Image 1 (cartoon, one colour):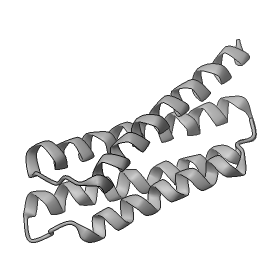
Image 2: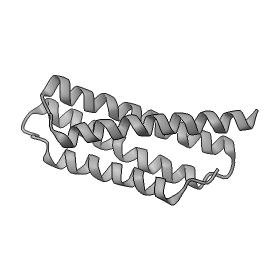
Image 3: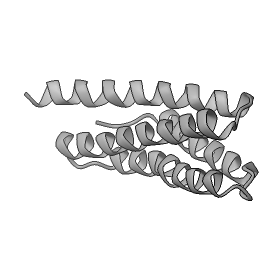
Length: 120
């Protein structure tokens, strides 16, 4: 399955938004530093898995890579929620990132499901 260039660009923009948020976090607070670093790792991995999926040689490999992107997006959502709920990190940027993460999770789940149905 071939991913549209527009979608690859969207996940790269997502990774960039994660990087920008991480750069602005108050790292003097250890808990924020730890959660922010976890978000940085998982959020940028979303784009990496998407790139790998776009170069998959089979539908099974595509599903595996999309599942990886889905797992990383879901993990990113956890870190965002913990930063918001337990560390008080709020604002429009965090809200937009939260919403985009929800959308990406839904898209990845749909992609994986449709591809799996095609494999059967």
